[in-house]
Image (cartoon, rainbow, N blue to C red; front, side, top):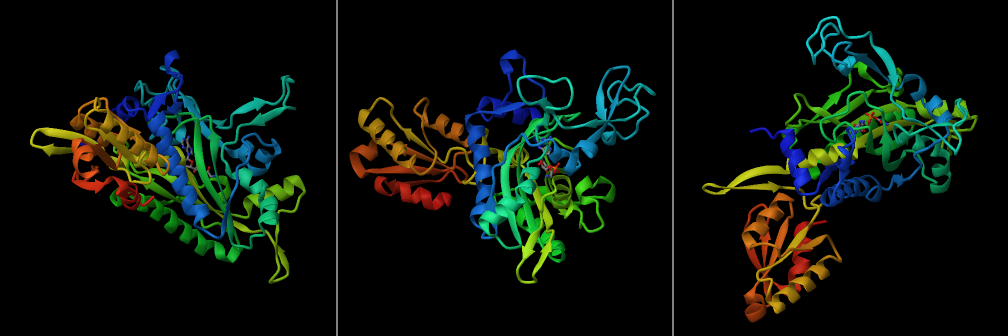
Length: 447
Ligand code: GAP
């Protein structure tokens, strides 16, 4: 049975992965808060990305630029003029749609009335605000919440290149919030108005761009697989010409390819990440609008060039949702007995280990268990739980995807100074000496 979105939303709320924003006030449309487990999961996703694209690579560096930027940035980038979606309203039921999401513009998909949809009109997706205590009433102090983190990277290209002394090809990565006044947000955290991006701008010589574009598509696809995504649900889709973003439309670009995931509650595979060839569009535009040099001096050929850019741009929330949905399994453990288990890759699991005392009223057992948790917590997230019987505690940990449970029992104290380690997926148990538990878990978790 395909997993329904309500089931994921309900598990997320019940176990503290994701809550509706401002819930005590009835919620706030399409905004979500990550609870204790969700915050860990999303942080693990971002860390895994950073490790793979910055830490492990010699040709990449990181950046953390501000959300508010000079308004000229958005003129230069083309967002002010072209970052629009076509909006239509139903005059009868007041529903609102993106025209490009409708099969026909004759009939309202909500109320079914014919001829009640307005003509499409262009709606800019950027959130506008005013900087400073006074709203001047005109546009003199207007600023925008960034709709992509990418522009913070482009405008810092000379700073980063001068200070890091990187030679082409090299890239700059950043993780951060982006904001879009989406016309039709929805599907839980999949499309929201405030979200987090994990973006790379990879600068290269123009002639290397087609090859590097392919290399990045392969590398980014592999990242999802390495973190355990079901390969049958993951696919690549090159954009059609008419859906290319304004920065990937030039003749010199090799377009955009999306990495898509088949969510069980969506009819078609949906975009997790786009890998675009932005050519020299952004650096050239910023050079033109700022009057500054955005070029690169190539010492080998003694020439100034404007680098081309390959941009793997991923959504942290979408990746988190995909890993969560993909990890979800319902299994029959014994005839008539089911369990829900999140089979996260150990690196993504919010809690790595749960330490469970078999008897919560026996001081020697509790003492050993608490000491063990504190020792393990120096290396990874470890939980202590004594609030139910062992069977129930195992099910609880399965449901939040904890890879290992460690049980401290009477034998630990009285006999062997060892504990029982239970594997989430196989449910097999092994006796491990107390002084070896940390090393055993570190090896198995392969963090
Ligand atoms: N700099 C290029 C860029 O922003 P994009 O395809 O518009 O490209 C990149 O966005 C990624 O950001 C998407 O693949 C998606 O994962 C995420 N994203 C975009 N809009 C989103 C939204 N409204 N809610 C959640 N994630 C979103």
